[in-house]
Image (tube, rainbow, N blue to C red; front, side):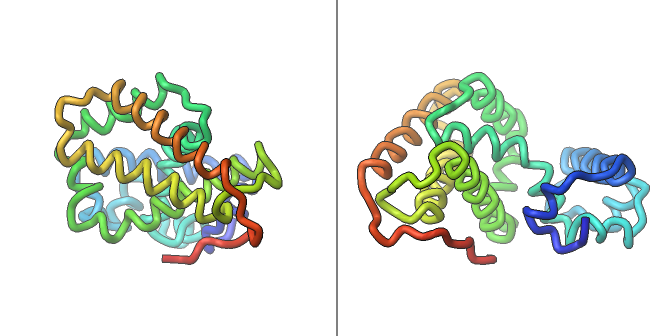
Length: 208
């Protein structure tokens, strides 16, 4: 894998050594993010924790933001499934339960000063995952908006709901939030499918 971090190259099969290196970096990142704020984690700390050299690191990632996005791949998949009307309610509730358990750390990440840096990339990655899954399941589907905009809307709705809940949950449990997230996503999905955009063409997401 080259260091440009594109989704296409990220999807290429890795040899055993490359997989071990990536797993070491992901494990190290997970350990660090549980102990300190994301914006306080340095590349040097990550490399020391993973016992990986700097040049090797840059063969896989351009920076810690890409490690973050790779580590969130499972989260993106859970949310993408819900966005497209096929939620796994148990996994979705477990995801929100995880954020609830993180408490202040999750609020700092999604609502604090660092959010302005990482949220645009998280939104873009989630929207891309939604678009990919949509193309796989319903190729050629006519929507009220171009696919990329429709996917961005669904991603924004999910992340906005999560942030609002972290800011002030008003007694809403993770299970209730999961049901509400799935229902809201289904409503948006129905609305997007009901319309038709004559000029719908494939597009690309702008780099933030």
